[in-house]
Image 1 (tube, rainbow, N blue to C red):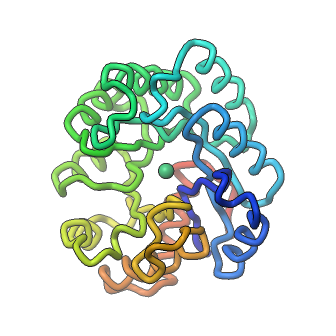
Image 2: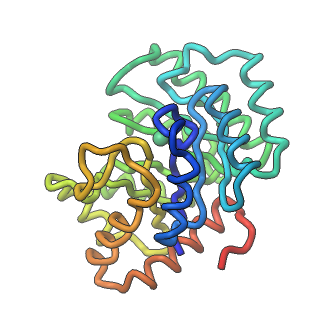
Length: 257
Ligand code: NI
């Protein structure tokens, strides 16, 4: 059994076949999917999906792209959504200096306010960091020892991974680990402790090499798992058991067997 710790099945590109996508995932052993919020509507939709399907969970949060839409009212709405027991984290939150779709000042403020929310509610966080490693670490360091979570689609250095692990964060890998030029990332996956690794598709984006160019979906997670098992020279069973246990721990999921 595998857990897809980061998907966006609430996204419009799944409107026509969402139910089939969920059953295809189950057929290949991906029995648990965490759908990640990116704005208020996306967060609400993730919660609604989780309410409807066994094995589905949700996170709620405002993505750095949408930071300029963040305000007190949005914050209160997120807080309200967290009352649902199927909400397992605040996310995805963080900084994106690659696309800069919201001003950096707004991104930082939105990130910090949501970290405070996570602290207040004792929930883990799902971090989006693209080309913003230094500022992400600096802001996270203000909450050291008070917040744990997941470095989603990790793209930093080995030193950064070490620092995140020291702060009790998990390192999550997407299909980008299967891309031909991702040598650095594969080095990190080889080196990192199995007890700190999570698997994710980031569906509908980042389809693994075998499916490159297609809409990604949780049923493609085994390609990522296989790549990491090969890198670590362990069996798929061992990798699946460890990463499922890691997901269960960080998101406090009910016992998964
Ligand atoms: Ni995402």
